Length: 479
Image 1: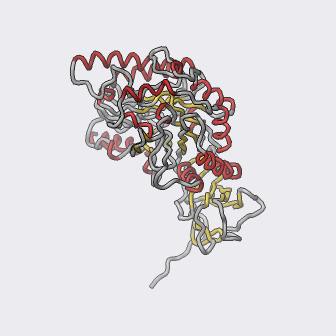
Image 2: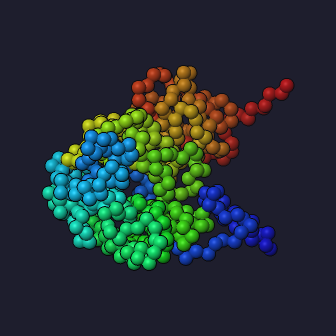
Image 3: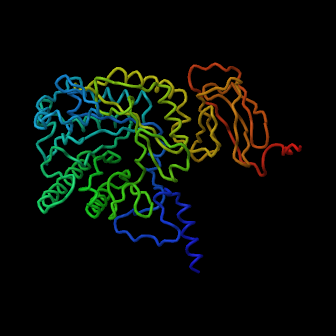
């Protein structure tokens, strides 16, 4: 009986596809948790189904850090621009006084939203408050807000309204870590720290409820700055706050960064179960294979330079091209995720021309090929060197997103067992069709009529389930 129970538990863990590093050994009992995950498996409601089908999103990092733009008194800061306040060479009070200079005369939320729409973004994540604590909405709970800057107007409202108008869903970024707040602590070591942090927790709760109340159309919250010991120790409080927020806004989407369990485990609880509605561990990196995502929803957030989120006047190192970013989008969707591209507007609110150009390149491609990105998922086909497969969710329509054409012009396909190719044609021109050449059972070539393509392209495969394995059964050669 004991062996049977152990085997059943091991099978349950395997079916949930949780990370191996976080799995409990099949010989151990499941850990009883008060503040671990409250759900196993994906959400199946309409709000989360829509999120799952976004495919492509936009991230916007903007705040006071855009004013220095990665430099201070002529010296270049080598870290991410939005972290410049943490630099030893900057007096904190001097940085904090940048709110008196914040007057973004070129800020145009409608123009931002039109750029995102043209790119093909289906959702945007916008920084309401980064680690420096400056609020882009007129929060009642601190004076360190846009209301007390020369600009004065509610930027968060302008962004939410503009993106709503374009039909782009909005998720609000919120940093729990707050360098400006006197009660923030990196750790709690004394009674005084504990008393101060209790005040900070109340402040944080008030601001989050304020955001959800002020902007009722937002679809989710994207949390940052939650890794310090002070917040990791707040499992009960954070769990209760999450419950309150979800009760206030049914369907609210929250990623895996918000809280830890009572053992300090983040993203995945002590039993290896995802905490939150999707995994946020894919920052500036993309899974290699479907097994890496463990059956969870996820998205990848990506910068154009190596690691610059907020505006940095000096973009050093490799800058990603439009084609690279399109490939990242296809790769993410092929593994069941969304791809989110970051923009860092200047201190005056204008989006830099390099980012606008990239948005245009991606958008031009998406206009023709968006069918292979929106509402698509992992296809179940073996990955090939020429590119990626995606599948229209709930259908037998599969897309080949081709980036690397072999010199032979022959694209190899290996289908899952008992899957037949009914039709194959170019997405951009359905009249250009292909007759698959059988290589062996469940394996084919599609021969391109031309092998020179300046842009990635998509081939549509209309498939159907066969009652038996496909193709000729070739006998293996005998020596």
